[in-house]
Image 1: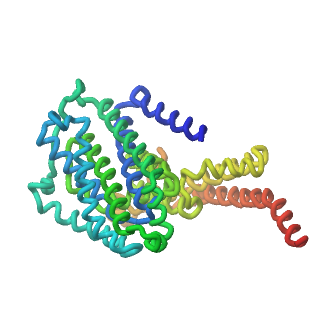
Image 2: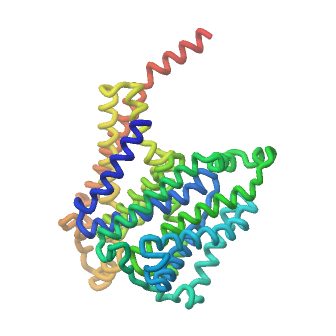
Length: 421
């Protein structure tokens, strides 16, 4: 517990120091990471804690955003709702809309619950462009952050600290909620709702309350998005946003409180860093999700715990070669796969195919990649990624043999115990 508290304190101290360590561009990315982390944590209250898989949580992120932008234009960041308190408007509207939607959605469970949430989100997304007075049509609604409490909120640094303060406050509230009797009951919703009903609990009311609380914190995340961008558009209701929060939560790990926040922060930074480098960044995001689900289903947050468990079991001296083999295999496989994907993406691009049609009788032109020209017809072009993949496969095989050798004494002891019994 002391170790976890120390790590959390160190992360908070690092977050407070980021404006002195990052450029303005990276600080903007940090703001988006904080918003994504809060949204994923709010979603995880419903999905990870209560076991209700929602496919339409972008609806509550969006209504929180639009409530905030209307509040910004209505009160001008003054009076009872100054700029730092504007996320309260997103929280209130998110809570109310979440309570209504949750009343319908939690009438059913499992696949039917997921389909109802998807239908509600699609309904909001399709209707929003037609209500121009409420959602601003396709152009959306814009506003401006007004000065309050001696701050003008004109710099990225002030917006960052405002976002950080709300994110930390909401994460703390979400954590304490999971420690309350009601928060403990949400685990019963996930594990066995029939037994809860048999014990006399109002399961539908409990599910609706958890749904509404999750929507409330999603509304706060949407409000912070508006405070950062000073505008809101119906694109905030896009199903892609609902899909993204699911991917982020599962990549980080829904079984741990900070897992979704970690996954959202990592994948948001991944998108920020890689989207400028390649058009295939969504493909890489999908590959990361598939690999995490296949080989690390508990999420990235479980990785340190698994590494510590292996270190205690085998000892660091015996574990280090296995880790080096694993890292080497992952690096070579990633390099080979990226080279192959980028090469194929350029070969199938419209520009390259247009160049082929202009000179149909000529040889295929070279492809520019990694500051070099690669001829598609040359064996050397394809031998490089294949060699990297083969090297990665070889290291994977060696790592599996090394792991089997480490497990051999345990299997021998277990077999001896069975014979003795």
